[in-house]
Amino acid sequence: MKSDLKTAIKHLIGKKCWAVSGGKGTGSMFKVALGKKVKREFPLKKFPLKNKHLSKHLRYFDGEFRLFVQCCAWRLQKKNKVICSSTETQETIGFEIKKLVGHRISQINLLNSALDLSVEFDKMYTLTLFCDQTYEPKPLTNYTVFCPEGSYSVEARSKLDFACGGSG
Image (tube, rainbow, N blue to C red):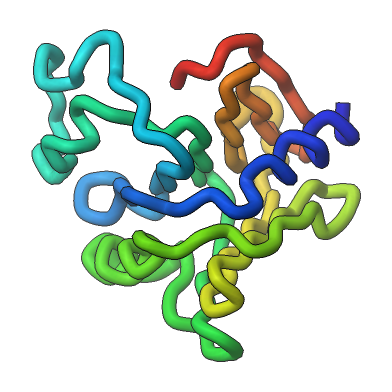
């Protein structure tokens, strides 16, 4: 299944980030919307959302491809300078991750057997995800990659899970 994830993430190369949701109200979690804008079947405005910081645009559309950074440590660099990490304040995270909007993924790689992930945007920004979840009685997801064919989640102890369908 690791080879399937490698194949799936290669489809993200060249995809443009058109929205990022995260920061205030989400802790260190965030989602990157990539590729085509796909109209949601059920716009999120119909549901009571506690996070009022989500844009109206994201209430109606989602990315053809998405990267959902959940419960892992991560770092964002601009060229060789660290500009943000998962330990920053929610406000700082929200401000810095939005810098990815408008940039295309130029390179994406699984870094090791733990499935740490490196995502380069226009050879300018590099987002590195470190799969550090290990507690299995109540497992938390490190990150999830959503594709049209399904979603790949890297769970505790870097266990890879696949679910059919691209929703999420």
